[in-house]
Length: 324
Image 1 (cartoon, rainbow, N blue to C red):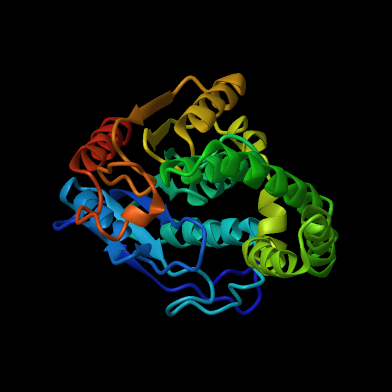
Image 2 (cartoon, helix red, strand yellow):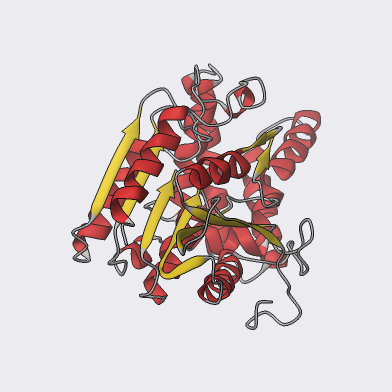
C-alpha cells in the first residue's frame, strides 16, 4: 500500500537471486504511459529481461504495475509524475522490511520518465544508495518534447519545411499548456492556438487541419502532461549525492542524448556529486535496442529487447558500486 495515496495498493514482482543472503536491490521504474511491471512496449518486456539479468548477477529487483494498471489499484488517468514518485517511495519502504535484501543497498533504475522519478525520490531520501538513469531527461519537459518531435520527424525523412511548420505549432501549443490552470483551460488554449494557426486555410482544409491538430495536441491537456511540461529534473538531480550511472542511446529520438546527458551531468556535478558516470551508447534507440534510424516505428520490428552491452554495462556498474 502507498500510505500517501489513499486506497492505492501496488502489485509487483520481487525477483531475488538463487541462494541465501541479503542482496542489493533495485526498483525498476517505468517510463511514461500505462505500463505493466515488465514495461511491455510493442511486445518487448524490457524489465522482465533486465530483472532476469540482474538476478544472474546476484542483484535483486522490484518491478511494479503502474497505479491503475495490471493488478495495481488507483486511477492512472489522473496521476502525475509526482504521484508515481510517491509510489516508488512506497516501494522503497516495502524493501526496507524485506529480509531477502540489504536495506542499506537499495537503488533505483529509471527508464525515460522513470529517469525523472528516480532523482525525485533519491533527492528526498538519502537512504537511496544508487541511481541508474536509462534515457532520463536533464531539461524541462517542454524542451524535451520540442527536440523529440524534431528528431522523430527527421527520422521519418520528412522535409525541413514540415519540421519548421510542426515546430511553430507545437511551440505555441506548449506555451498554452504551461500557462493552463487545468485540463479544461488547457483545451481552450489549445483550441485558440489551432484556430490561429489554421485561420488562413480554405474551409475544407481548415476543418481537416483542425481535426488533425486536435488529435495531436489534446493529449497534452492531461494533468500528467501539464505537470511534465514544466517539470525541471535539474532541480532534483542537483540534490542527489549517491553514485549515478546515466545512459542514453545515440539513436534515441524521444530523449535526445546530446540535449539531456550533458544537462544531467552538469546538474549532478553542480550539486557536488562526485560519483557520476555518463555514457552515450552508439546505435541504440530509446528502448536500448540496436536500431537503424531510432524511429519509434522500428521498435516492434526489432527482435532484440535490450542490447547485451547495455545489460552488461548496468550489471558491471552495480557490482562495482554495491559491494558490501
